[in-house]
Length: 424
Image (cartoon, rainbow, N blue to C red; front, side, top):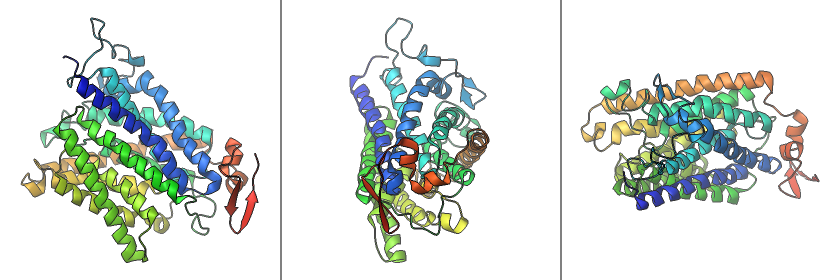
């Protein structure tokens, strides 16, 4: 295969855009927490970037795309440290079927692994030990993310080559199962294992910096064009379709979320708009290459409505998902994955394709939920028994930034009705 410089440039740019999403997430999450824990929240994203960036090169690529082991995972030793992945037998850079060097694909896929783990952190804001989080990142990405990536994208059980491919080829364009359902289920499990923040349900825990949230949402939207457009793996019509669908679905989700807020609460909020952005991006991720722009309006609008209602479930059911990872990523990820069965232009139910695609999409969503839930629970309880998850009550009340990182984001922060000056 000859080098396609245009496709290679597109994939390098897409990888850079996806990498930008993790700092964007740090801003998004950082603005949503209270002022005394903003640095810790941002550090959880940057910590995930650091750990996964190293782990992916060592065994992550091999576990995702190496020699198949039972349809569950790739052999971690097959291409350990990218051995045999960078160069071909003649010593030239190995080229994939799209004319792109394999090493570029490694970089692109690494950014997906990074952002997926970082998403989970929002569920345990304000109360988790940073050291335990860093260990969790390394273990979870190894035991949960890499196997899921292999099952869906690496020719495993949830791919077109798997057992469900005989019914209909499973569709996950850019990560509905691998990224969003995976992270959303993990977030729910961690929220339950780690427990509630002190004062949850009885004290106000409002976002401390909404402009920061809006900026983070904007960077996520911008980076998502690499996420979805890059998943076409070349600069072609599918990349263009994914770009347009990503824009349209996200816009529709914002409208859906704001309508719910206006009708339910009387006000359309900036936090709702930012959350609607993410809900739409999540929902269109698996469907970006298989639905029409008109269909993407339905995907996004329904996602905005569903997630706007779902974020309130934590108060009714009593779990403390601090920054609504479950309500946004799990709920919209499930809807986006299943919506393909209705709206895919070639195989969807509404386009005369019958129920086969819908059945397969539902199956892969359920498998992703069960797999992520079981693996995450085992990891979470093991870390709880060994390292412990919670910072001390004193650290949580005074501020996790100062207690854990010996820093504060602001010279003064507001705690209740009393302004307290904190010096490192």
